[in-house]
Length: 214
Image (cartoon, rainbow, N blue to C red; front, side):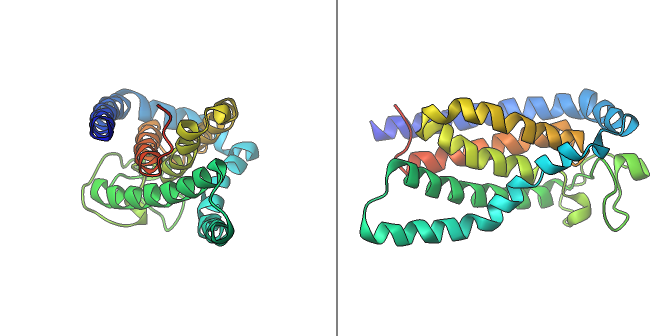
């Protein structure tokens, strides 16, 4: 039964990667540039609400080790409740998803939608667009989105482990993901890829933690 579950998880991973590839290609050729120019033209990135929505993912990552440490101390006295085990797995998933994102970002070498720091090349700032594989650095780290990977890496564990949290996740996650595009921090394809990456990592974290509902 466990082998069958692992094979199903691997099959779902391959399907997710195939969907991601198609979606990223569609976005790259027909969606990313028009959306980025639209955001810039209508100055959506000056709306403070969207900026605020981009803060929680890095905050959560910064505090994830402390949260895990507190949970491990609690574990000394009693077994984890399901929500505690889910929280621990979600923190691990978030950290691993972001590390995957860093590695893939260096391998992909995609320029950003806008210039934000150090006169980095970008679509809006310098007219630079595309992937330049294996050019590591902050100026070519747009793909995949680290924020999206963190969001879905954390949230998808809860989605799988505690179905009762799904309505809340449906309210919280979409605005966080949309804000990344609305701020021109990422292209649409970056967010899709980051979200799928986070979801895949979360699925394995939930499976290894024995949290997946059957």
